[in-house]
Image 1 (cartoon, helix red, strand yellow):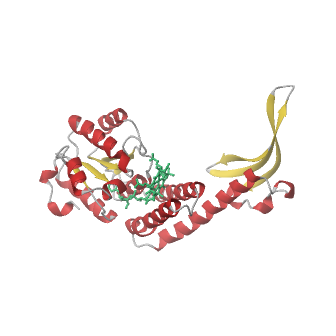
Image 2 (tube, rainbow, N blue to C red):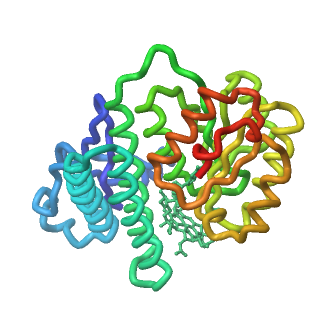
Image 3 (cartoon, rainbow, N blue to C red):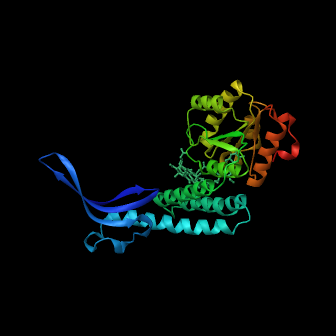
Length: 282
Ligand code: B12
C-alpha cells in the first residue's frame, strides 16, 4: 500500500511518499520511503512519481491540501482589506459559512468539502487570534457551547474579537459536560459566560447548563447563536426566565456584542441584568 506520510517540523508539514509492506516473518508492517516530497504547501501532482499518480488516497489528500491552501490565501487577502476584525467576520466569513451550509443542504457540496471549509475558517481565525498581542490587565470571560453542540466557529470568532478588545477568553467549546463547566468557572472566576447554541435540539441542554450555573454562581450569562436567532419570542423569554443573570442576544452584529460585553463588565458585575443600561442590550 502506498500513501503520503506527514511529518511536522517547526510547525510546518512535510510529505513523504511511503510504501507499507507486511513482513510475514516478523509479523509487522514495514514502511519504506519511496520519495521525500517536500513542504506540504508546495507539493503538487507533479511531485508524485507517474506510477502513483492515480492512487485515490494520494489524489484526495492533494485535492484537500490544494483546496485548503487556495481557500486560506483568498480568506487572508479578504481579511486585510477590511476596516476591522468585526467587519471581516460579519461581512465575509459568516456569510461564506452560511452559504456553505446552504449548498450542503441543497446537496451541491459534499460533506468532505464542508469539513475543508470549516477547517479553513477555524485555521484562519486561529491565525488571526495568534497575531493579536495580549493585554496585561485582562478579565476572564468563558465562552462555551452546550453539551452535544459541535458547532464552535462562532465561539472562536467571538474569542478572537474579545481577545482583541483586551479580554482573556477561556474558550471551552465545543461541548463539554456540565460538571466540567462548573469546575472551570470555579477555577477561573470569569466576569461573564457566553453560550453559543446552533442546533435547536441543543436548547434543552443550554437550559440545563444555565440552570446549573445560575444556582451556584451569580455571573452574567449571554446566550446567542443560530438556534436562538431562529427561536420565537416565547422560547427566548423562557430562557431569560431561568435567572435574572441571563440575556438572550439575537441577530446582533459583532461590534454590538462587544459593546454589550464591555458595558456589562464595566457597569454590572453583580450578575443581574436588571441593573443594565437598556441601550447595551441588543
Ligand atoms: C461548519 C458547519 C458544521 C461543522 C462544524 C465545525 C465546527 N468546528 O464548528 C460540522 C461539519 C461539524 C457540522 C456538523 C453538523 N451540522 Co452543521 N453547519 C456548519 C455551517 C456550514 C457553518 C456554521 C458556522 O460556523 N456558521 C458561522 C457562524 C459565525 O455563524 P453563527 O454560528 O450563526 O454565529 C454568529 C451569530 O449567531 C452570533 N453568535 C453565535 N454564538 C453566539 C453566542 C453569543 C453569546 C452571542 C452574543 C452571539 C453568538 O455571532 C456569530 C457571529 O456573527 C452551518 C451553516 C450555517 N447556516 O451556519 C451548518 C449547520 C448549522 N449545520 C447543520 C446541521 C444539520 C449539522 C449536523 C446535524 C449534520 C449531521 N447530520 O451530522 C451536524 C451536527 C453536529 C453537532 N452535534 O453539533 C444545520 C443546522 C440546521 C438547524 N436549523 O438546526 C446548518 C444550518 C446547515 C443547514 N443549512 O442545514 N456543521
